[in-house]
Amino acid sequence: MKPLLKISGLHTSFGGGQDEVKAVRDISLTIEKGETHALVGESGSGKSVTALSVMQLLPYPRAHHSGGSITFQGQELIGAETDTMREIRGNRIAMIFQEPLTSLNPLHSIEKQIAEVLHLHKALSPDEAHARVLELLDLVGLSEAKTRLGALPHEFSGGQQQRVMIAMSLANDPDILIADEPTTALDVTIQAQVLKLLQDLQEKLDMAMLLITHDLGIVRHMADTVSVMTDGEIVEQGTAEQVFANPSHEYTKHLLAAEPKGRPDAPPADAPEVMNAGDIKVWFPIKKGIIRRTVDHVKAVDGITLSVRQGHTLGVVGESGSGKSTLGRALLKLEKSRGEITFEGRSLQAMNAKDLKPYRREMQIVFQDPFGSLSPRLSIRQIVEEGLLVHGVGGENGGGNGADQRRDLVVQALEEVGLEATMLNRYPHEFSGGQRQRIAIARALILKPKFIVLDEPTSALDMSVQAQIVDLLRDLQTSHDLAYLFISHDLKVIRAMAHDIIVMHRGRVVEQGTAESVLEDPQDPYTKALMTAAFDMKADDTGAVSV
Picture 1 (cartoon, rainbow, N blue to C red):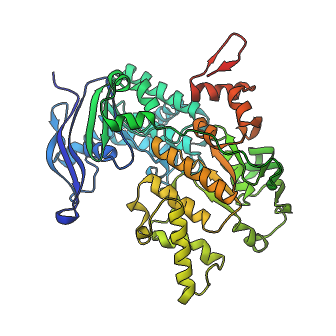
Picture 2: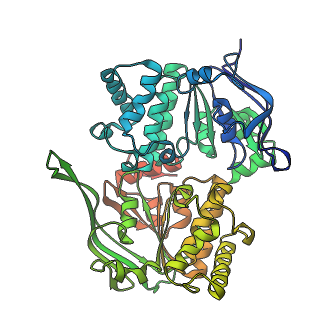
Picture 3: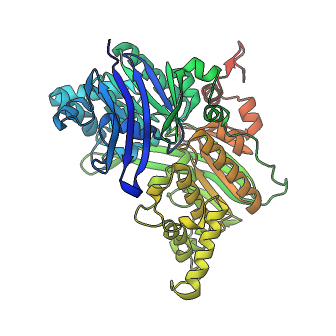
């Protein structure tokens, strides 16, 4: 009996001659009906190129296959006719991409985008497609979106955007689902729900899955078979049980050992307060009717009080939509809010843009998606240097000694985050995810800030790269006495970074305290649920939890 999907001796390259990049070299794997095969490796290992080769979505002819075969139910996909691939893509083979906001059309509503695949492959009527969209949103745990079908992708959180992508991919009940880091941007509890959903759908539809991930915890619970990939090659292959119990290759052992470890250095007890917020509220109006009258509010942040001291990290934990990122933007005056915001004893709320400008230099932010936050049209030097130009550091006219001074500052910032001066004239797409996040950190660091909001800075990174970024951020905090507001749904990263923690749920703080007290002895049921999902905790009869 033929396997559902078979890759044999695949070679995938970009360019030719001296500029040829051999992204995938002589890899082979098979996937049977109903089987989950995990393709594991770090950024740049060739995992996504392999998936795109299956879908024939690479930028041909610049990308080309110098050898090998890919067959689906015995049918060769390499070189297949356009009509053949159009019938297979999104119908018999579906794919979930890693970065939902760059995959979703920013100009179309979520209903239109989910319904599009139904119209193309099933020829459903508008009413039938609408009913199926509602069903799919229920399946992926996004039932609240039923009242927002006309909303655009940017109006949803990162986790919600990924669930929309999953709904689109499952719309036509595919034979095989290629899931490229499907839960990277999701909270631990939603991640568990989505993975359980995918398992249930596999059983119901007898659907196979090619799971591409760097999270070995997911592989352990999801995969039947595993291929470990590095530098374009598969270095180890076998059942999940074999690979985890007895890894044979050094790279596999390295992946299994990679996880953010350690704890941050304790700041001095008398460290001065850098940021203080009292009863912060960010309410977004819900408007209806012809005259768009406000009928209610979305209470994204609803009465939060916090304090961050020099050399101190306050971790903000919660699921997508809990208000974490909104809180961070409000503290930086990037979002209108009510309540009191004080930076080094000076109130910011009444300040206009001109008055705020000097403080902008001292308050910076690093965003979740480094690829989306770095301009693709600017070189790395231009990106990191931009803040210096805005604030007139190193000369304002762009010439003479001022330009040389700014270049030196950019080089210093890059080297401080582990990058090299030779990278100055390269562009964001030429770097891995971890390198792009280091560039984003350098951009924030170059202005010598005192307070940095880190909004999910490691969520899109490989496990070993996460550990590197965590170590980097801790070292920078120690050397510069930085105050961090560290936003994350990954409690393992929070444990390695935070001195204190607040847990947010639906815009409010449900628990707060030192990192040790919140992580080791959570009191609120919501916090306990987060811990259970993150650390595989077990509850006793009294409801207490233990690792």
